[in-house]
Length: 148
Image (cartoon, rainbow, N blue to C red; front, side):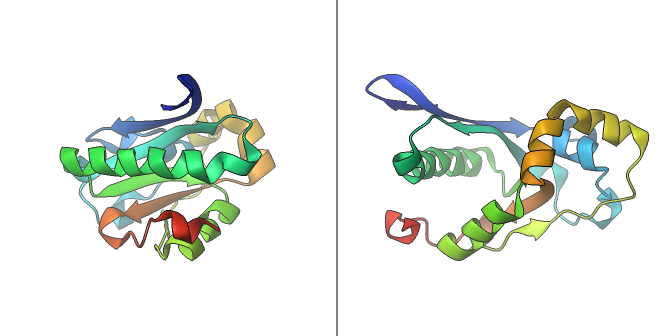
């Protein structure tokens, strides 16, 4: 949780697990785990990322929060983050931080994953979210100078 004047201004959740069905992103998008090459015991899902209504300060809240999540991930031996987001956010990560973001391979949608995705239908419709992963070993420069 990010705080400003001891008040919450941002949150992020890091979910750990060792099985594909433990991660909401895998369940919601019917990820083709046969094509996933990373070790499931070394991944975490980034979710519940939210920042308050501080339009001109969002990056100043987001960046330190994500740096802490990165530090914690390294302490825990996590080397891959999975997440769902929009193409716009993916482009920002790739452009601002020179970090590749990879698309998770998907199987054809089935009713079970469509039902699971129903819980976030407003987000998926508004932001056209898709599943991605980021190899923490590929993270580029994450200084504030890249955030302009």
